[in-house]
Image (cartoon, rainbow over all chains, first blue to last red; front, side, top):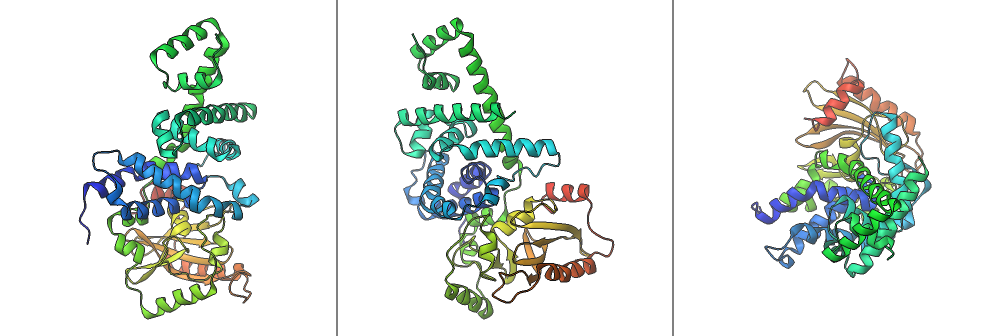
Length: 164
Length: 240
């Protein structure tokens, strides 16, 4: 039995945010939870690589993002169906039709962004990371991140404002 | 000077240094269209945050907590009985590709009962504490979806409370119909029926499989299913 440590406690505290990022990356809550589980397993195995005192959140986000790119996205592309795209993230399960429409609307707009723009927008606008932190998570130069972010944001403006 | 779009976005995100910020602010003062852009940026940020906020408020699934707190049990899903080991062996021999996707759930169900001891999240049903429990997409659907007739990979058809006061839910997928009851933070599978053309070549109408499960559900709760409000309240309380 592993005793609870700062490391485990830190991951547990991050779980709601990790689920949010996973849902955003995969655009599907159930797939996102699978991604979360794989991220946790990978993190526990690689715990010696995490330097105590550095940020656990960016480290976990980096693991999750790399897992998503390496293992899941390729699989998802193969499996992607029309139905899945229509289903969207299916988060809120909101009762009101209006809320549902809004959910689907934002889902679809995000779905149309190229992957590298979507992850940049999610990290900066939803997860609240600065450009440098987001670039470190993705593993790209900060200039690349800022340009992907600006293009993704402009595309979302057009998609969301055009459809209202 | 001209302010390009990258710089405007960086300004709205507070990512510029002092000198660049002053330049952008001067340009904004001279051009209302730039100020408008910053306002749109803030509106977009709020909209995206609101979109994802429900995920932060949802209870974290037990399987994720287990994956952190008790990785031995979570990834090795307890000592499997000989029967379950045999099932897993059969599933391996079928050599289906590993499917982790919500949208591909029906395909992974075709494997039958994949006891997810080797790969958490590889099938809808796993084993914990010597009992069959929902995992992966099925666990998520049971925990987070309200009953609805909408087509989804996993449809939750109704919820009820059994005589012990536990919540139970009837679910259906393209290949299975079943009844799961909440027990110590997991969805214990009380009844599972194959149904539909995916079930190992033996065709069986999903409708009739569902009929069996519905009859079992009725037996558990003679007074009937939870109404929408009661179900919503139970979901919000984490099915406790």
